[in-house]
Image 1: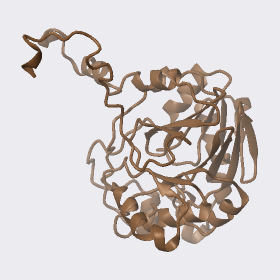
Image 2: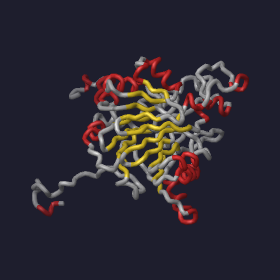
Image 3: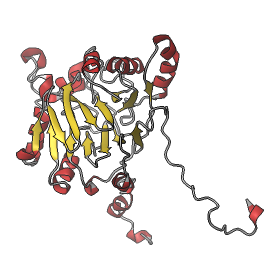
Image 4: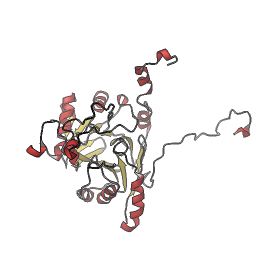
Length: 355
């Protein structure tokens, strides 16, 4: 756009969205994961891209949607899970808080799309379409209600894999293990606004709508807690499986709402799972659930010596890479600051001491 007459809403959208263009797509494609390691990138919310030394690529819970974009009539959609939870009626002010860091239409070389549960900020039609169209051999792995939605959207049934806790699916060099989820918010998400859970009971089981996932790789094991609330069953998973890195559903719950883990819950989860590293996610995305993960670090520092914690937290940034075990002892993520080739080439200044 070189003249104001060329500026239209469509031209502006195409020139600026997604905000990162294909930068992250290219970074992931060009990354060579060292032997004995795995890398993953945070795509926002609970979305991650996992890449192994062998070149297996798995995307989980990648979401390309938005929150509220208008106030509308100021009322929440009837039957919404938060309405069922707390009897609320006023519009939830959940606007998207983070940029789009990856271009879904440029997704390539994905071996599987894994989705933990039925909520639309995890189960995303744009991601499904991109993987279906660009990666013809990719599997679609999720619980029954997730698979039903994929098929409804047009994903070929033969490409889907329905899992329940205890199931294992081999994807390239990775074993994808389905485990119990502890997501009561998903369990009360019933699409029919006229359906009364109080009168009729729950229409499905947790295993049909949600699972947690363990990725077993040659470079270590990654536990994705999806949107699970705190459960003592985390300790069962920690005893039954070797877990190196775990992702936790962290956020600041509005009064009257129980949906995200608190900072104390995150530490309890890490201790129960016997993980080496705990990484909070989901706190980034919603304006009304936004939380500062530094709270987890401060509480960990306060408690770690007395309780003899054998794990540490990691504060990530959306779009950033985490590589295990390289980053095991890091507490905070920082993007590459660049300019590494300083003074390798001649400067163009009026004289050397100019700056």
